[in-house]
Structures are given as structure tokens and as C-alpha cells.
Length: 86
Image (cartoon, rainbow, N blue to C red; front, top):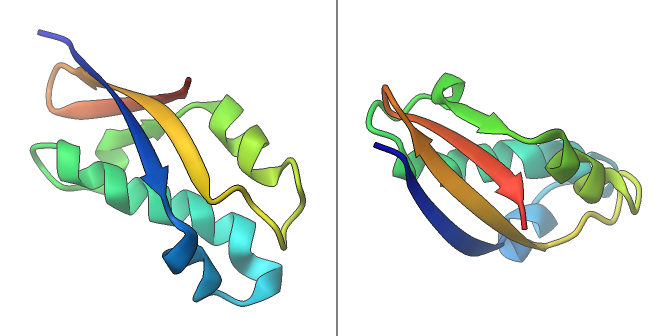
């Protein structure tokens, strides 16, 4: 059974803890950790992030990523999660 949720993630506090030149690359890891809460096995390999999310985060460069991202999260069979940009 496929379950769908739309959530807004505010990741500003976590992003600002990183060095300026690493912020966009660490934003993907932060999102994966937050999305793991919705999986059954709690592994990052079970979380799939759409390429459009990556393009949106990197749109402003490595130093200034978006800090609020609205995602559509789908639970796919076997406890896997797929995240898409809304």
C-alpha cells in the first residue's frame, strides 16, 4: 500500500552549523536523515531523493542552499521512501 504525505522541512539550523563551502552538499545528507524517520528499517539506503530536489538545493550555489523545502513523501513497498519536490 502506498501512503503519501506532503511536508515542509525547515533545515536552517542544521545547515548553518556547517562550513559555508559545504552547506549544499550537507543539505542532502540532512534531508536523508530527516526522511529516515518515515522508514521502517531506518537506513539511508531506503530513502530515494528525486533529482529535482538536488537541482533546487544547488540552484544558488554551494554556499547558500534553500533552507525550507516542501516535499511529497511516498512510502513504497518494503519500507522504502521516495521524496519528490512539490
